[in-house]
Image (cartoon, rainbow, N blue to C red; front, side, top):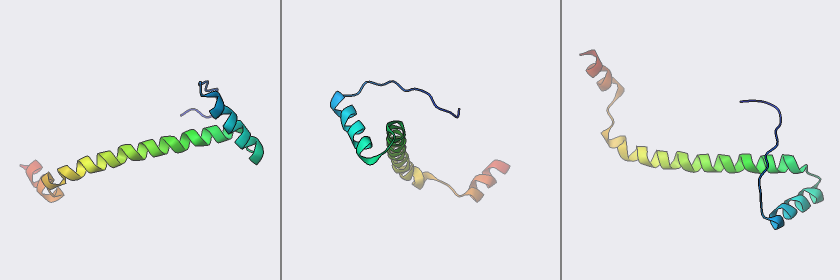
Length: 77
């Protein structure tokens, strides 16, 4: 992954942008830092959702699993 900064131009609702700017101004936060942190947190939540779906699907297949020893015995034949 590249290090450094880049510009990410997105269109958002004017009221949302103003609310974020106001929030950051009141708390002395840098706008870019706040937005970057929010994006990273949302990415983490979305990835967790995907992981939970994968876990649920794999749990259903767990009954079909065999032990590692059993698998290795079959491979040796």
